[in-house]
Length: 301
Image 1: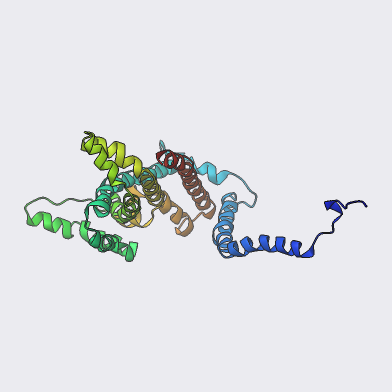
Image 2: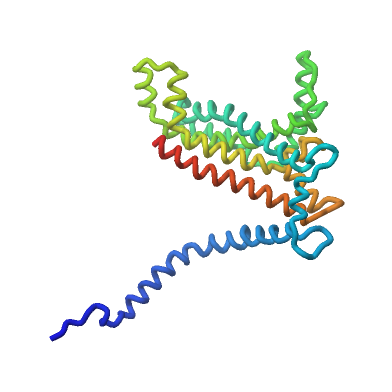
């Protein structure tokens, strides 16, 4: 009596329905976030890309708007200078936030009493509950020539300083805006710091400098990378602080994009091209941080 092979057995309808359900379950879970992502991120980005390929006054596609990014007028690449200024502000802001935020996060996560840590952390991030626009206006009140800072300096016999509508005022506002984010990220990483390794390093004769660079920093490198990436990306595209605290010479790429869409001599195609340059720059930074940041985290672990 011949034995039927497995290929001769007719498929079970129940097995087909089970396979379909296995495919439908992840799709059903991904549908809400996927719909939101496609509707409010991917489709608008595609529209911006298409608009950036249409030069002003023309109907056919072209790269004129992107060529204008490299426009050379009066001995300067006028728009590349703005991009460089935005990058410089982001680097300075990120550096100061890391230098100022690391000691604060270390104190909150390691030194401060445990029963007070949550309250202290809440007090430190409390400004984030207010609008960034209101915080920038508060800095205008502080930094203006007749503001709180100069009034105090004159009261103690010092001459006032003028940093409003300058690059210094922009950087001060950006550091104040993004410092809590750096502290939050570093705090999360420092909270998992293995203090036994610090004690072992001290027992073996390591000084505080050696302990910091060889024990503490490798353990929290993932938090440093995350904090630097978060602050640098958001500060590079900051609009409010340069617009309110800076002058005409402090314009950033976000301000130029706003002028192209809402200014008197608007050029939506060129504004879209600048937006795509900004999106591309941020995407490259994120890709590099994901690639090399993960490697470092793995090697540190």
